[in-house]
Image (cartoon, rainbow, N blue to C red; front, side, top):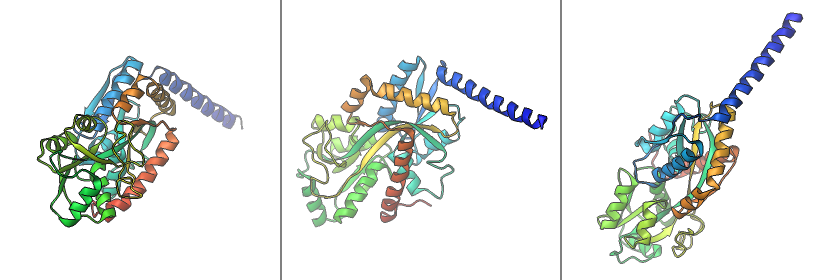
Length: 328
């Protein structure tokens, strides 16, 4: 009996000691060590821009280097998988988003080597951002309804560019096609910057992109004409641009989202520190900088963020099946 009691007490002491040690590590995290933010897309798009803004703000708060590492390919899967397999120490984060953490799992559920919810923790939700549908100003199409009417009369004649197959911008237009019964041709690019460049030069009749970053600047400069934003409410940065629902597609709503995610096995005290520090920077000057890029800052608890990701996977699985975009 005495030996059993001693064993129990030793176990309790070990557990308490571990918790104390983890809390001490978390208080000093990242303790001058560099932190990586993985980005699953090429430089220049909304995901990359947001990651760099977060990296700068967190780096200043921590007094440590926060490095952005672009690993484009497989619709964000390469960077997400690398994070899932990284050491669970809190030094590898990923800019998770609607494409990499909802649409890609919906498309490639049979091929994923990780659980997009179970293998991740979701300490920092950054906010939401719509996609924006654009045409070159020389095109005699002034509204989304004009575009839909033309597409119905000329099936297969209009093209639209996006950052790639299966990304949020692409699927937001696949949903538009499904809801309006139009036939337009998707032209995938290797990144949002290339798709926008062709839209601005007139080489592509229409284009869809994440509002954050370059598309917002292009619309404000008159380089492209915005036909609508995909969210349920108008963007504060483009108050004169209607939503798809207002422009003739009732019930349409696609709002992208950004966050910082990491390994689910990262010690809880470090996850709590990440959440608290994320809330701190998102309440400071960074908030306005993000909003100026078209992002609506929306903080959430890690549990709320994880539940949202799970619901988004379910939503986009249906769109993927209806659009016949399931991967092998």
